[in-house]
Length: 247
Image (cartoon, rainbow, N blue to C red; front, side, top):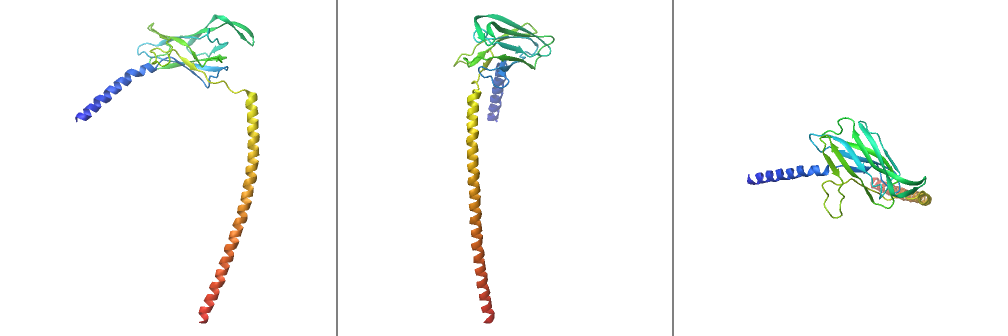
C-alpha cells in the first residue's frame, strides 16, 4: 500500500514538472516548405502559437538579417484577416545582382490582425517566399516580436549559444541545406549510370538466358535417365512375375 502511494506521488510530481515545461516549447518558429538550399529559393512558414489564456495575438513583427545576409526577393503570402506591411532599409554594403546593384533590402515584415487575431488555443502560419538564400551561411536567424491584445509584447530575440541551454525566448532559426548538384555534372553522371546499367542489364539477360538453356538441358537429361531406370525396373518386375507363375 505504501509503495502504491509512493508511486502515485512520484507520477503526480512528474506530470506536474512536465506540465510546467510544455509552454517552453511553444514559441515563434520558422520552417521551410521543403528544402532551404543555399543559393536557392524557398517558402518559409513563421508559426505563431498563442500562449495566453485570456488574450489573443494581434501582431507579429519579423526582422530579417538584411545587413548580414540580405535577400533580394521577399514576398509574403496574403493571410485572411491580416494586413501585411513590408519595411525596406538601406544596406551598409550595396549588393550586386544579375539586375544590377541593390542598395536596400527587406528588413522587416509586419502582420497586423484586422479582427481578433490568434485566439487562445490556436496558432497561425505566415508564409513568405524568399531568395536567394545565402551560400556562405549554415543558418538564418529571424528575430520576432509577438504582440497580444492586452498590449503585452513577447520578444523572441535571444540567440542560441553553442553548448548552452535553450534561452527562454529563442529567436526563430532556419537551417540551410547544401546546394543542389549542378545540372551538367549531375546529368553526365546520370547518363553514365544509365549506360552502365544498360550494359549490365544486357549481360545479365544473356547470362540468365544461358542459365535457363543449360538448366533445361540438364532437366531433360535427368528425366531421360529416370525414364530408362523406370523401364528397366518394369521389365525386371515382369520377368520375376513370369517366373513365379511358372513355378
